[in-house]
Image 1 (cartoon, helix red, strand yellow):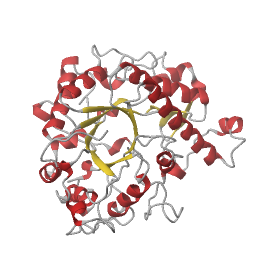
Image 2 (cartoon, rainbow, N blue to C red; image 1 turned 90 degrees about the vertical axis):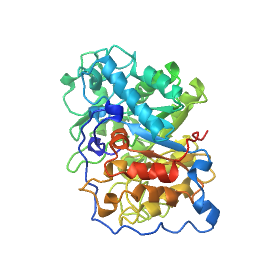
Image 3 (cartoon, rainbow, N blue to C red; image 1 turned 180 degrees about the vertical axis):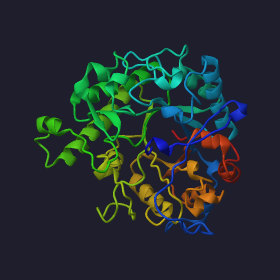
Image 4 (cartoon, helix red, strand yellow; image 1 turned 135 degrees about the vertical axis):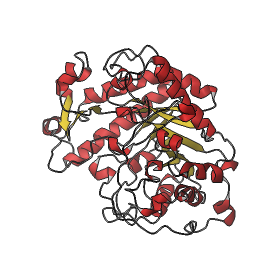
Length: 430
C-alpha cells in the first residue's frame, strides 16, 4: 500500500468506529469519465461480460490498517473494551456490506498485535511500544471474523521498523536495538536490511509465529519490500552487497534475489505449518511499463515494482510461489498514465493458467476526495470497475482500501458497489 498517507478516513460503524484521516492526491490531471464501460476483452461472450459476481465464489475484502491508527484503533490508548468494540464494528460492517474477508494489519512496524515472543506489542494499541493492551487483538479478530462467516487475512509488513530514524525511540529490548547492524535509515524511516540472511530468517520467524498460533486464513503482504525511492537519498546497503552480491551482475539483480528468497522461503514455510493457509501479496499496480519491458503493461507509471522496489511480482506468479495476487490498481478507468481498463487485462493475462487467484485492490479512499481527478467524484466509478472486471475470468474478487472508507462511504461509492454487485453474500474462492 503506498506510503502511510495512502490510507485515510473517519466516523463510526454502528456508532462505534471513530476516525480521522488525511486523503492523498493521486498523480496526474483529471480525465473525462467514460459514459460506458469499456468493451470486454476479445473473445469474451456477452454472457461472460454480463455475468453476476454473486453467481460464483469471489473475494470481497477490505483492508483494516493499524499503522499510525489509520483505521483501527481510532486512537492509541483506548481501553481494551473500546478497542474490541471498534474492531467488532468493522467486522459487522463487513457483513452489512456483504463482504467476506477482512485483511487486518497485525505487524505494521516490526511489532505485533498478538503476544509475540519475537517482537514488542505495537504502540498503536496503548500508545507505548511493548505495553500489553490487556487482550489479544489477533486472536479476537480471528474468532469474531469466523463467527460472522468472514475470512481473516493477517497482514504483515516484512521490513519496516519505524516511521522515524531514531533507534533510541524503540524500546531497549526491540530486535532493532539488540541488532543495530540489521537496520538502515532511509527516507525518514528505519528498515531492516533485506540483504542480510539473518534478517530474512528473523522476519519470517516473527510472522510465522502467528501462523502457528492462530487459525488465520491467509498471510498477506502489501507493497513494501525495498523502500520506495526517495529523491536524493541512498539506501546504503553497499557493505552488504560487497559481502553477498558477488554472483550477481549488479546490485538491482542482487536485491531482487533477496526479495525472491523472502517470498519463496516464506511460501514454503507457511505450507509446512498449515497447508490450508494461503499466501497473498498486494503490490503496487505496475510491474513494469511496456516502454521498459515488452512484457510490461501499457502504462507510464513513475514507479515500477521490478526496478524500484526490487520485487518481481510477475515472476512470483509464474513460479507459483503465491496463492493470490492483489495488485493495487488505484487508478480510474481512462487515467492516462495507468488506465484501470488496461492494467486489469494485463494482470488477468499474467495469472492465466497459473492457478494464482487475482484479486483487484480498489482505491475506495479516493472516492469523493476533492484532490482526486474528476472520475473519483462520480459515485459509480468503482461499480464500473466491477462491471469491467466481470469479463475477465482470472479476476476472482476485489479488495477495498480502507476500512474507514467502507464505513463512512463519503459519496455513496461503496453503496453503489453493494447494490449493483453484492446483492447476496458469497463464499471466497478456495
